[in-house]
Length: 280
Ligand SMILES: NC(=O)c1ccc[n+]([C@@H]2O[C@H](COP(=O)([O-])OP(=O)(O)OC[C@H]3O[C@@H](n4cnc5c(N)ncnc54)[C@H](OP(=O)(O)O)[C@@H]3O)[C@@H](O)[C@H]2O)c1
Image 1 (cartoon, rainbow, N blue to C red):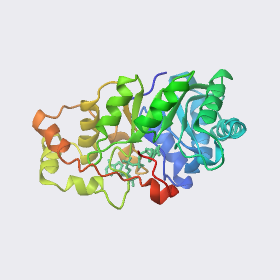
Image 2: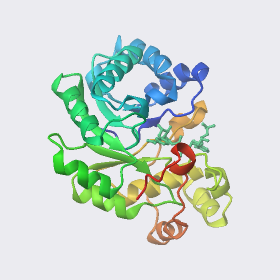
Image 3: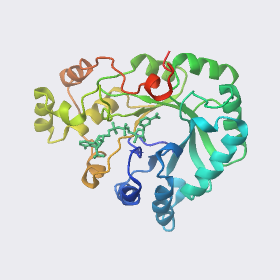
Image 4: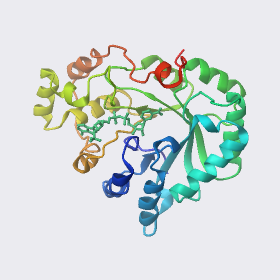
C-alpha cells in the first residue's frame, strides 16, 4: 500500500480517546496513520489496529511512527523499533521517521540513518524517512544515504507555506507530508476556527457547503496533487469523516487569497522545544 493523500494525525489525542478515534478513522477509510513514540498513545492505536486487522488485510494500510530524540544511537534505534512494533501490535512498519534531527545523546545523524537503513534490511520496515529536516540537512543525508528518505514530514499550513523546502524535496524525489495542515495548536498562529472567521473563507465555506478545515485541506492538495500528504488530527468524532470529504475545486482567486495569508510564521519553535535552532 502506498501513502494516502489524507492520513490521520495522532499527536495529542489523549489515551482514553485514542482507540475510539482510530476505530472511527478506519471506518472512514483512512489507511495512513501518522504515529510517534513521543505521542504516548501507540498502545491504544495498536489495540484498534489489531482488532481491525483480524478481519481486514494489513497490507492495505500504511502505518508510520517516529524515532524519538532519546533513541538516536544504533542500538536504541533498534530497541525503539522493537518497542513500537510491540505497542502498535504490528509485524512490520510501513514507514519509520527520524522525528527531529536532534540527537539527545552523542550520536551523529549519519549513525542514526545507518541504523534506520538496518531496520529496512531486517525486513521490519518498508520505508524510512525524516521529519523537520532542512534542505541543508537533507543534502547532507543524501550524500551518504544508501537508502534514500521516502519522505520529509514538515510543517505546512496557510500561515507557513514552506514552499522552498517542498520544492527541494520534490526535486530530490522525496515525498512531503504536511504536519499541522490545519494550522495546529500554536500560540503564534491563528487556529483553523479563527481562520474560518475571515469573510473570504466564510464565503468559500458557504459556496461549497464545506467547513474551513475542508477548504484548507483542498488548498493543500490542489497545490500539490502528487508526492504530498496531509495528516490532520482530530479527536472530534464527526470531524474524522469530514476531514476526508474533499471533492471540490477552489478557483484561482480563492487559491491566491489563501496563498497571500502566508506570513511565513512557523508554529514549531525548536529553540523553545530543544534550546537550539534546527531550521537553518
Ligand atoms: N513531525 C512533527 O514534528 C510533527 C509536529 C506536529 C504534528 N505532527 C503530526 O501532524 C498531525 C497534525 O498536526 P497537528 O495535530 O499539529 O495539527 P492540525 O491537524 O493542523 O490541527 C489540529 C487542530 O485542529 C482541530 N481540527 C481538526 N479538524 C477540524 C475541523 N474539521 N474543524 C475545526 N477544527 C478542527 C483539532 O481539534 P479537535 O482535535 O479538538 O477536533 C486540533 O485542535 C499530528 O497529529 C501529528 O501526527 C508531526
